[in-house]
Image 1 (cartoon, protein in one colour):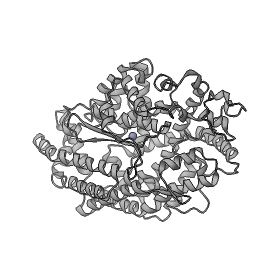
Image 2: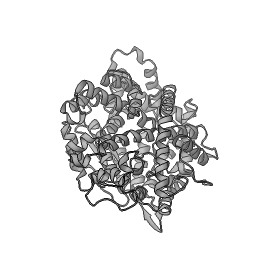
Image 3: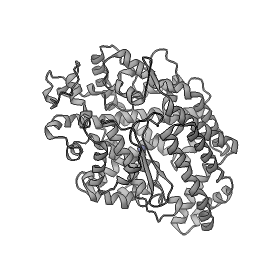
Image 4: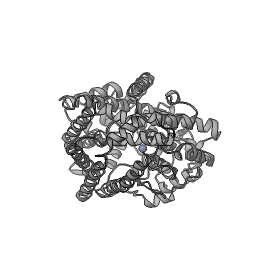
Amino acid sequence: MEAFILRFEERVAPTEKAVKEAWWNLATTGTEEAQAQLVRAGMEYNRLFEDGYEKVRGWYEGRDDLESPLLRRQVEVLYRTFAGRQGDEETLDRIEELEARANAIFGNHRGVVGGREVGENEIREILRFSDDGSLRRKAWEASKTVGREVEETVRELARLRNRLAREAGYPDHFHRSLDLQDIDTGELDRIMSELESATDAPFGRLKADLDAKLEERFGVGTVMPWHLSDPFFQSCKHDAAAFPHPASRRGSRSAAGAGDGDVRSDENLDAVSVADVDRFFRDKDLEALTRKTYDNMGLEVRDVLAKSDLYERAGKSQHGFCLSIGREYPYDVRVLVNVRPDSYWMDTMLHEFGHAVYDKHINPKLPYFVRSVAHTSTTEAIALMMGSLVDDPTWLSAVAGVSEAELGEIREYLLWRDRADRLVFTRWALVMFHFEKALYEDPEREDLNSLWWNLVERFQLVNGPPGRNEPDWAAKIHVAVAPVYYHNYVLGHLTAAQLKHHLEERVTGGPFFMSEVAGRYLIEAVFGPGARNRWEDAVLRATGERLTADYFVKSLR
Ligand SMILES: [Zn+2]
């Protein structure tokens, strides 16, 4: 068994590295050549799993007899890696091709507003700041045009993924994918229902407040999706007018502590100036703030920054991610983002570098197949915990150098915004969860467009544009290239809340991000052990209790 694993590692390591390199090349250039290279590398990787599956499955089934917990764990990971790559060559190759195509479409597509091509950053800015309802509508519609271009690719992917799942004895890809991610479907259903009922009432109140403000701001009787600041209403961080604070209703802007001349001259001056958190970042060096944040925790990120691709460029992926290329020490960890000096990108920088410090500190002495993060949800937990610092008044003052005078009344707004945003995110995640479940139940169904809007209306309380029949679901990149993934953000949020509580109550006794002890604790208790324990045990070891939704739910109140 051990000899097999070692031999297999020798073949996997270079191929896996080549796939990651190809992924990076495609994301940074968007060229057809890079796309072809990624497809070739992916196919070669898949070939590695053609032989040996029966043997590995046999070991997996008999794993309880293994004495060494580390060997047993390697067998578990190896089995899931193999199982995820089983299927006929033609189907596997076709999936590689289609995923690369979808990635390229998302990388290269630009929506058009008023005859001009606009990137996602521009669309976001229009939806955040413009008071022109018709421009907003055009920008929102432009954000969805990629859906049509990618829809057929996504449907075909869903069909093929389902074919593999059914061949392996699962009802569909949704179930197979969760099983291969070591997630219990029943338990996940239970968590999602718990979050639905915990958010029902507070989200309803929040949305009603938000609608009232937006109706007033835009002079409309019904709030439409383009009146919200995020194209999918994933976040409400920039729905400035929603804050139900007296400062946003008073006639004077002094309450906001903003006299810096950087305030827009619209009717919502007060609300906007209170809520304009971006102003804290306009003249800041986001790289420097990222460095400082991690320095405070004793976590080095200069090496990662040096290898990263941080600024906008034509052809480059418009999203943010962190990638660890290969598993050789010293690790090659890189971040791709499209930084602009605002709070969205500050959040994203802190988030992606959260993934990076995790990847960087995995114990290099661990055997190859467990030399990785414990689970996607665990690394998302670190990233989310770090990203949320942009709304933490203590971080803003101690790290970002925002003065007490400037913070002033905005403190209260920030606390509100942080909580409101978690509510909004949870409802959005419920849409993704239920939509993908239904998509894989039947990718052929003709009513996916209306199914999507039914879920959006039910969970997010957002009105669908009357008569709209567009594949808006396909405009969400995860549905195409990161399928059955969203629950990892949800579990990540639960883990982050629980871990933060543990750190501050039992480890640091104060803000975790101001403490080198917190950094050392994370290295020892979370990063270092890699995937040597099952993810649920990893959470238990790191926080002293099993994963619970309690801390997260408490943070919504
Ligand atoms: Zn992430």
